[in-house]
Image (cartoon, rainbow, N blue to C red; front, side):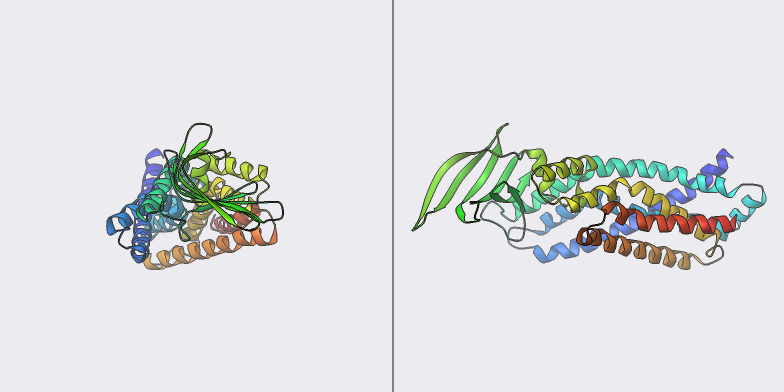
Length: 353
């Protein structure tokens, strides 16, 4: 039985890896084509290539559920087409045993995927964003296209680029009073973290008086703010690129500041429940192989896998933003599509058994 489990598992495992390579390769190609539109005198072809390559870990993490679905259809479907699954069932191998043989390599993939999402993706995404922002000269002036906005009490801050070593470029700050009147605006070309505060360099501050404005230029200035390099590394990235622990910290930071954290809760539950989502898609793929896709061609299996994967992704993309708009829990937005897949898979497997 051990050899049989390894044979089934390896067939599915290598099929998933092959599909994952194809999907990620296509995603990188399309991302590179998209980056070509931003190439200019400062942001060159090498910069665009480096940025796209640094986003590879995130794309691997994001594409694993769909790759698992299609790969399982191809790997297990190949055994069905050659009548090997029929022979296994005739020899007394239970359907439950085959399902477990497929799930075992998936557990290894899910562990690797978790490690990539938790440790590799945040670092590579931070470097990718910082490298692109620096190549576009983000320290020159406030960039409307790149950078990140953040609010700290009555101060609104825009940062063009955040480097992982605790250095900021292009820091613009706007201070308002209780009536939302602009009191001052300042721009610092660079900021470095000093352990308990930030040291702003080449600072130009404009104070708005009742009848006039006053401009002050200083070489350096102390900036006391609760943001630290670790937290800023979280702020500058999209929620989908953050680790589970980073999302958890930032969710509570936003809560303490009285800011909306619904989008980060959605990203948090999406990452936490991704292993269950992937397992539900694999279960659905197994049920298709033993049910309606038992004796179809390889092309039909691939088409079905792509179709189901896209429908599943569209359902997630619709329910996720809907939870932010209509106020229901993001947890349900993640669980509903996965639960439907799991129920359909179990029903089909019960019929096949």
